Image: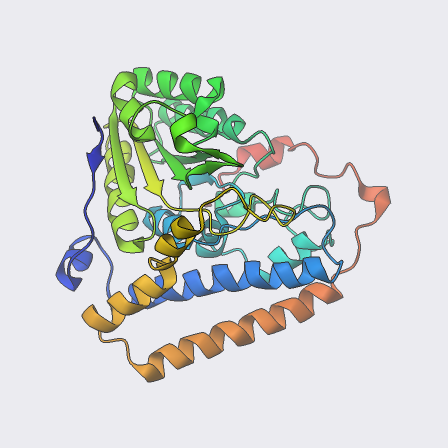
Length: 348
């Protein structure tokens, strides 16, 4: 039996405006979703060309969830997006050419060639880079929220994790601590239904991951992760609540991983009918249809946005290819933050 609140879809433009988005904001959200998918599609091409070292991961099908949450964040907030959350980086303002440079291990990537191709973040934009041990980022987000409380700053931390990571102690410890202290943090579960090849019914016994929130002392909310506006609405409510002193929320965005765990995985274990059913709710197509039905998106506007995204990504690839390889002599530069780095909030 479900315990968490199950959020419904956003029905009208009026409801969107009440949530703080005007028509121009909606078009920006649509553009960010297109850029997000375009970056990862071109990343696949770079990988096949042998230009990306290591493996390669994407968040296809998760664009609505990642862009929706990031759109709800304020400039001064911080987040720890993971490898399925490219839309967070795009929405927060990371330039696509720097992402391509990161993919290829070049000097102009956010980590300047020092970490994995998706282990990236721009700290000046309030983002903290992930590590492969995904639930380990939740204590980091919780620690940020504790710092905000101690400093009496009206800021919120957002921590992402997958439903597979919910089985780890890091997740439990973070939520226990955050709930007890009523910290300004929002926990976002990207539930894409497969922890690599393990389906959710073998991962946890509750109906939803968000059902666990009640035991930690705060609200759990389940939302359709392919509905970017519903995700935005629920994320904004949770972030506003946290900022006002109302404590954490566990927001579970239900999606399906529309590709394998990484490029080496063909996802043969996922039933084909499941793929087909979720493909019908592609988040970009779903939002495009909503914009046409509710916000008067015209053919001309759609063509203009698509053409602009294509130009942006083409020039971004060209610029990234020109980025130099990192100098091995500077391998340890910036590996640890200096006192100056720690003293200056990212939003100042």
